[in-house]
Length: 261
Ligand code: SF4
Image 1 (tube, rainbow, N blue to C red):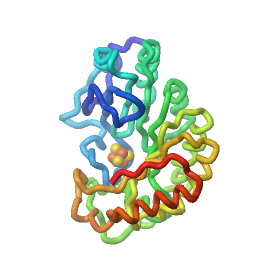
Image 2 (image 1 turned 90 degrees about the vertical axis):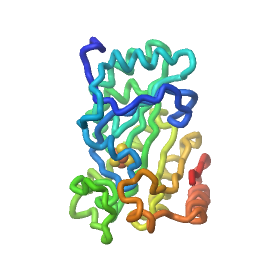
Image 3 (image 1 turned 90 degrees about the horizontal axis):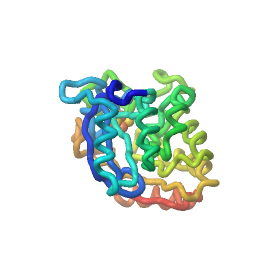
Image 4 (image 1 turned 30 degrees about the vertical axis):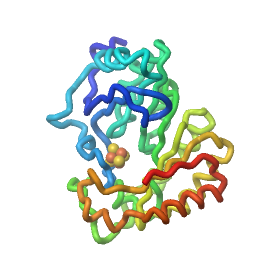
């Protein structure tokens, strides 16, 4: 496939990053996400098309990454949600892997596994988000009508809005990726009230049990960069609550845990 003829909407590139997976990596942020998390600190990447995003060819992205060799170990594609560009990313990842670079995806985890399987095959590792489950997820992450990202006073019950099978997708996808050795870390943005973080950790611990090398990253939500900083503030857990959740994860058997305050 000719990389020069395929275009994707680019938000930005960071040539060298050491927070997007193992080693030094070129991070590519693509435009577009189907979710609408209230805590999203890159909300400008949610719309698929904006005036600010540049349409660039895969060849351009390939050349950007190659210009950082030998100082990078690979490339991480983030967003927005990179898997919405799944077909287009396959030839890019194939070309980069031919050059010995590893290819990572930083994903919300809410993709259709069967549909993006060709991309999964050429992906070395996922940095996989846990979005929570249960009642509050519609309000926290799925309310696309709430373009302003306003934190409502009342949490809208998820159940009326999302098919249970779609809600279950996050953990089901994780369960499918783990045996393939394709998960480097799972990340949970810890927000109070919207979902039961302890219940979620219990479920995740069961999935991670055979894979002790997979890192659980608990990220205390921060309001900076969110669209409604003030509205989100009451839902920021304390450092003690964050530590307590990490201790609980350990009790549940998760071995590699890191917390980010
Ligand atoms: S999944 Fe990520 S990019 Fe999409 S809205 Fe949520 S935080 Fe933002």
